[in-house]
Length: 295
Image 1 (cartoon, rainbow, N blue to C red):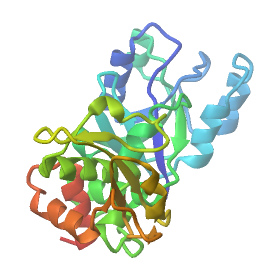
Image 2: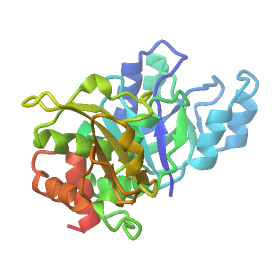
Image 3: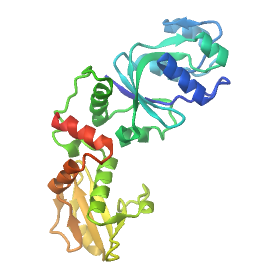
Image 4: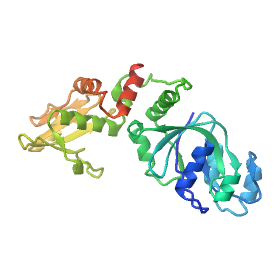
């Protein structure tokens, strides 16, 4: 099965983005425009393509949907007001214009039918949120963590065990958390220890460290370096800095003899912090914890 992300942002028609998204929610469908006046509805791609190619130069997005989006796939989407939704695909591609769409000039016609579930922002994976920064109308999310999490979340939100969730590759919580979620967890852990994170220091163009932290009691400053997966950290590298460096490697892959200023956050200590804080941490941590622990 596939996991996708789709933007609903029509460029044709008089309807606003808000009206268009509400139309999709009401009619339980997702899709794109590229309308034709000679067809009201069809499931015959050749019939649609024959008519549409006369007036549209590029139908690649429509064809991408026809060729790639299938029944039981899951699709993430976002409203103009930035509410997130997870949708289970119920049918294959079809061309459809309704009386409402014609009346309101809503530019949605190449569609697939879905069932929606709204997802609270703190249950949306960072990897999914990141895909919405891309301008491409629809794209596959090729990430095993996102796939299994999305299936588990659909089961949770729908109240049915529709999807079989494979957790065999994610035997512990740090294998399920993505990079940004791991950074967030360390962020919150350090604050629980009295270190305050400077928000402005957390920028993607900062190649050396994730963020700056300060101790309000002592005035001491420190940097953080966080790695996941099989990317190791060499502790000796940080000896050249005159200030403290907090290090965390999710699989405890450290190299070198260390340095006095390099402080390695223990994996089991961070996991204990996560477990005892599940009642107040963003919901995605609790959901992923239950997924991994089969709770």
